[in-house]
Image 1 (cartoon, rainbow over the protein chains, first blue to last red):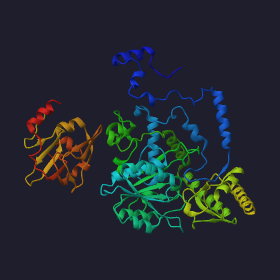
Image 2: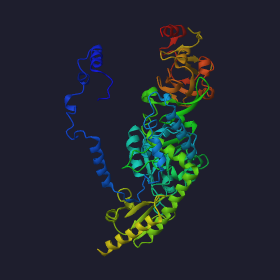
Image 3: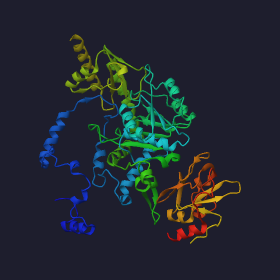
Length: 457
Length: 129
């Protein structure tokens, strides 16, 4: 049965009232040439059993490879309770309901989420999530231009060490809204944002500096110096961070003398499984002084008429249904389900659990890099340890090596050729707490054999 | 109908102006406007020194249910803003024509030259709702 509440009679009555002959007639202004005439590529409907069989067959094509790719999406252990709780009927929805305050449980979860994210990042306020890490960076640059009233330049410095997809999405989203972006080079020896490049770019007024910590190479930037540099020139600081890493690293709220102004990132590491690139969720936190420029929904604590504590959407005058064209963005809570998973994940692990995940991931990555760089033809590109990723240089093109590893059911990392051709044959690898010493050994043996075979060929 | 100080002039978009003895002009929103908005919770004011042209949106008044732009009816440079509103925006609700002023301009055009309403003319507009 169709899930449409109107009976044929209802429809006839409504059409009569507005004087339209048919529903079709309401779309008259769309020329026939622009209308889709059927969807021949879409197959007929399938029964549940057939769908299950089809999807199981598709899933088998993915296999269960041993995965050492990070690059923005990270394989972490997700306690079984996370998705068992999130998929309960009361919680299993992506949206805040239209009559939001009727769903106090949903609002309370969002409130807890905001509290945890603000605490994790060292900020005062969080929104109820964004689409993903990339769109969160784009939104943060737009927000910085609104928030930094001393800067008229609308000029943002984006480090080349920021995730290349985040840079692309930010440019696509914001460069047609009057923002100008400058790419900050990195030092080839360290993989860190070059202070000389920063000085050169900062000769002209800029509105905000984006700092990625850890950066795309897994390296740890000198966030204190970068933050103070930007603040001394009247610019805001946008921190792009990995939430897991914050269990170990200094929160952006404490960077430099004054701390970052806006913090964003990808929430996937918090309880969301790797899933062909998404859906994931983005997060954003800031200081109260900038809250009115922040996009997205915010849940606040309040008391009802009887004095009982409760939760409500707050600061809605920023939002599209009130502010219309001048809203801070059209972001709603589309990623609410993933945000919910993140909340349950953080609640189950606690600060200590998250710290263990971060420390173990860092340790595993060091073990991985140690094992791989001991192989002839493999070297660590940037000297010191970072967080849970590292760049390895190979003595031959990376793609065939990854293909050979793939044939052994190992995803060996990300080939950086398309993103950082200047590095030569380079591979970005990652190990989280999910990789055992045996897994690392398996990878090292396989790589050693693949390279030896390639050399012999 | 409210008591409107007779020295004020008004716009059709519910801003008021007061010519001050030092040649500057004080601008706020009318009693009618503050009542329509409800309890004000936040005010965004222009930067001192900013040059405004006629009709430019230069301030935002936000209530629990709406946010509205405030337009300057005359051109000029902002010489002062009511910083008390940052902490106590409800001053606009309590004293729209006194403590609730928004900002002061040094006009670059003659105040007489623009089509503003007198207090009694505005009262007629207000009565029409």
